Image (cartoon, rainbow, N blue to C red; front, side):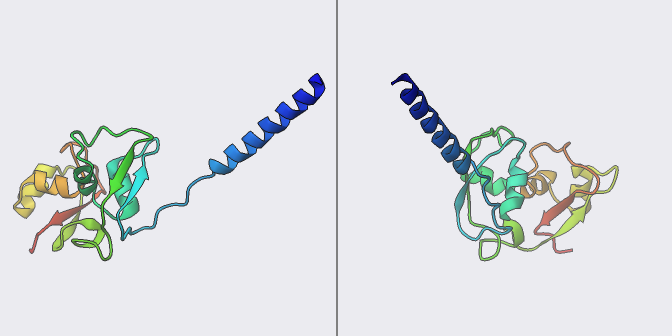
Length: 150
């Protein structure tokens, strides 16, 4: 009788392991441009900017849609609402405001100097690019300059 019980427990454990491994299969990556609203579960190492790039939506739009008081404070396992963006969505490509241009940051540039170059507040440029700390930019980074018609 005891042997039969041990076999039964072993079979149940094996079936649980198989069903858990099937359920934990990696999710398919999101489309490059998300055309309908949806939800995303934050994984370790992800930021609002990286999530925004996955769905073609600005980090600022995600932060606003989720009423985040501190956009730098997201955690693994957190569910975020991803607003509509990308092709067919509001604004231009990537959910950024229509009308603008891109700027590639060169060594030694700051958001203050870039803002002066385009005649706009550096916080406007920062918010359009999902940057919450003006000092966290790097050479080679591509910024959208919203509404610039120069």
